[in-house]
Image (spheres, rainbow, N blue to C red):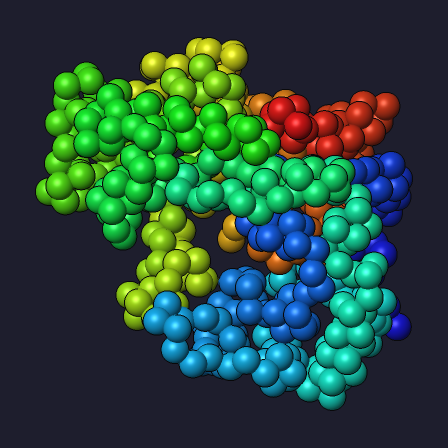
Length: 468
């Protein structure tokens, strides 16, 4: 018995379902463009076997372990590392059994679709994961992982990935990307410039990060001019390692365009650790505008990911560090917050700013109208908590009427879980084809136009927007 319904996510009404199925058949095997994500470049550089099923599916994936945590399961019992190097579970089979015993928790979630897709399509498993099948699953997947055809580069090629972007801190030495480039392998794995650690005065160790930033670039980051030059130098270094985009994960969408003397004074306070919370937000906001101006010079596409209260649990942050499932969406203003940046560069058609949100209430009221008029602005896909069939459908329903399809940028999977990449793209392609089929059957889109739009949403728009 298959884990997956072949008509999953398609409309119930038969004519729409048949059309959705036909559109999907035309795009299902298109190459994958994965322009934003968090897979580890070391996997592709060293091309070593994945250690075990738990370290492939459970330990690195906050979508998985946050659900288990919500039911009182300790992150240490799932092998999630501690910042102090303290003990965590290292027995992969024990972690896997705990995961399997609690697999029912994922019923109805997007994670269940992604996991079942990976189990069936990547590993050929068709019996549902449970406490009873845990060891069977573990042994089968472990055996597969020992084979050459399941190493990272082989899976990359099997998944049909044309290009994938990882995301690295501005302070990263990009050694793994350099190793990939020098290896002779033709898989396209590129980086993206993520400067939060040297832009956010509230980032832990900000002053030390700025000092290291200066050492890496040879710029005098004790001065405002030297600090900006360090960003230019680092952005050029990232471009040399394939980067086509920068990525900015700020708590708010606030932007600013301060006079240079005011920005310099604010930077001095930030470096000295003397910023108030409002001043830190103002500095982040001004730096978004500075990053946009640098994008006009060097061509990097700019991604802004605002609206997350990151690391909400102080205890988990202290014990396990960042990105451990405790980032929570917040209300976000865009119309007023983005105005300084848009006043400065929003009318430039040679700039691409891709805006993401975790606040769905802003789609129709703010985001689609903004992207529907400013040449520089594009809408990123439904993301993170809304990277789901319902979230993707709502995104199309609330943005298409104002921004159309061509002020959006297709799909990105934004994942650390490598085997979920084809699953996530499959969900996106199915949802978009279902939406297009509904437009056709309700007389809002011609049937001969739908295949071209489906192709654009699945492939061309992401490739074009991210310059891939």
